[in-house]
Length: 130
Image 1 (cartoon, rainbow, N blue to C red):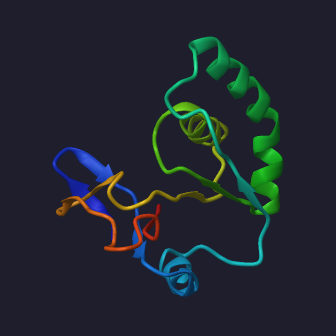
Image 2: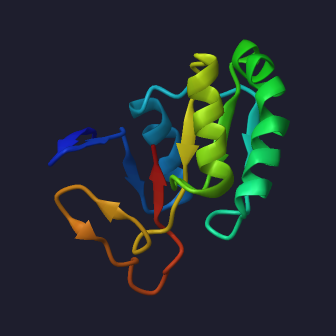
């Protein structure tokens, strides 16, 4: 799914309730498997401007290599902290490698559905790819 909701562009996303559904979701999103993957974690909203600037300086030189390798970046799926820095660096470099955000249901807003509650009995099972 993707499109426009109000004034916001919605990136493609898929809902996966079980790990076995990941290959189908990745294929539907056009994300190739068997490629290098970098998992980026930590520092969403609690980083200072100086820390964010340092992070930006650190990732800028590796963006061309990530793009050349056809890598995929997997992160927390928000537009804050280190995830925002990576997205901005990718955009500034004109890179095209995929950014895949993974977020538990109930922690993100899903277009036309509002806040989606976690699956009963398994609050961490949902994934948001986008």
